[in-house]
Image 1: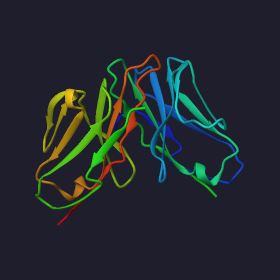
Image 2: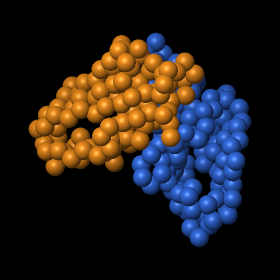
Image 3: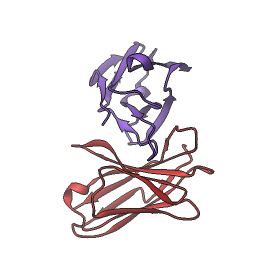
Image 4: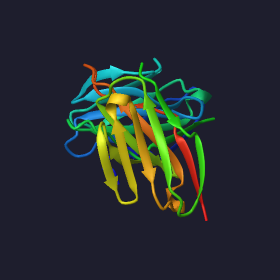
Length: 111
Length: 111
């Protein structure tokens, strides 16, 4: 158990819908990262938050947004969903030591 | 951006055999991690090893930062070692330490 929690584990929704994925980092970690794992793109970095502030963006679509709250949990919002958004979404957290610990992931299926 | 190449892409072993997985990267890094993704999709931290050598049971890893490669050694393999092994690296930037993943080595250990 990495200490990073993600909910829900599985999510099935229809095209055009909006979903919210939630992540709680390890106790004391201020950094939260979101990654997407799809069959065609592999594991890709989406966005990084540090203590509530956005620090870096990767290949994140405009339809996707994220935020980190004062209690340090983070949410990834995916809207106007398309079939191609079906993927495994991971959250990771780290402290100043750089090593990132990953949550169990949320498997999103868009039908 | 930084490129990460892993080899071999696929590997089939008999239980008890040893193996070496390789990760080459194209730039100087401040973070290098090895992960095992099990058949349930979980990403399990194996090593945080930006340089040097570490051992954990039957697994060990070596990173030669000056030559931009890392090796993961698996000895006396077991069926539970099956899954995908990922190498991931990051470069220190003002925007944090996003990980760039290789495409992985798919390992299958047979009885």
